[in-house]
Image (cartoon, rainbow, N blue to C red; front, side, top):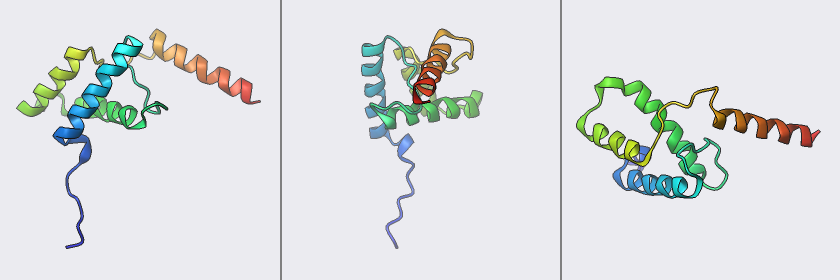
Length: 105
């Protein structure tokens, strides 16, 4: 054996609880759970949030009891499964990136 780790860390219970706590702290500090995928202060949280949204979308109604509990845990914090492209948050993020691009020129 070469010591290959088969477990997917995104779904491990300890990682799950750690990211949920980070998400709760993020909401406490920012007022929402709209963590960017490339969130500079916590890249793991940003990636995890993106994966959770995708997984939720893929699983749909086929959720097993463990995932139903996990998704309910996220919803209890105020997690949004979809971010509308016309929302204030998406538009402000777009504007911020555009301003950075203009400043770069």
